[in-house]
Image (cartoon, rainbow, N blue to C red; front, side):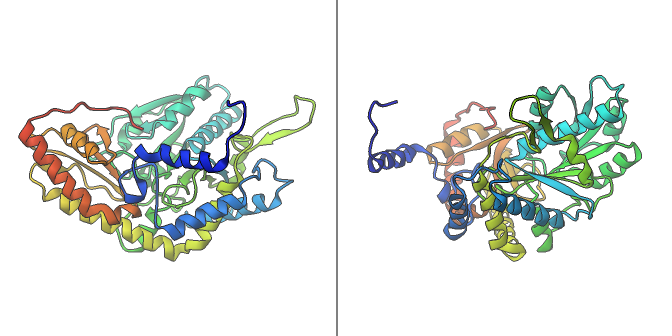
Length: 411
């Protein structure tokens, strides 16, 4: 820390300069992390956040407007996901916290209803997001990962065979982050009802895209509370919901289940400390941003963004398939796109290395080894440039015979 402070103009200039070597998300050169529509929408999200920049969403009594916006956001989400009148939910900071809380809920419910369970267990597909494993690590829950089917979906029969007396929860993806396909939620819902188990839907990626893609007549599978047997669902507003980061929801068919995710204690001098979520202090800016963007766009605006995403995916798919030596791994149902080399003389990781040199951040998948794109509206303007650089990268890899090194780091 400097002894004396510096002027803001100089600090601001340095901050801008520090970003010089970062990948340019505004030009669509990053296939994940940032979800961007246009400057107008971006400014709505940012200005709403800044209006509530200093407010703390922990302080519901001090900032009733924040509590009111939270409840309105949750209400809009319950409506979007066909929840019944008994439903309720919480505003969380992201998919990892949502998955943590649903696992805590299931564990505490099991402790109350099935005290003989010593080590509770959750059954998930091998394609499930690892935030479930992360939560389980902290909560003392076992995760059983079931190998996915050949088309990367949860194997319902294998789920059924894996159930034992300690099983408290199934988790399904809508869709899975790696391959972009939906688990068979209708079948898993039937199994959950038949075997008296809870079923959580991780729709953190697709929750604010899939309903609107269905609205524009794409065949999107069932994913929400319209499916009997679904007991909870999480969805990130800061992904395809287009709000500032720090915005997700966890919803329950039966709102009474929220009591099992809650933490409270009076074991300190100040009195009752109680939170429905893991975080204590948290930014009210994220709440305001989510509220503002959802009201600004409405269903019509989200349908327009969905059409842009799906049109961009089609253009990329057609362009990639036209390049000699490349193939799409498996057609996803939503926004993900994986492609790989089908030419033994062309190494897909060498292609990725060449794209990096041309200024594109490259997402990589391990199973199967491929390049991974999470398409969002900003990529519509960069399709032609990307395909041009991809063709050049393939030609360079073919002529050089280079073999790249697989970077297994997910993020």
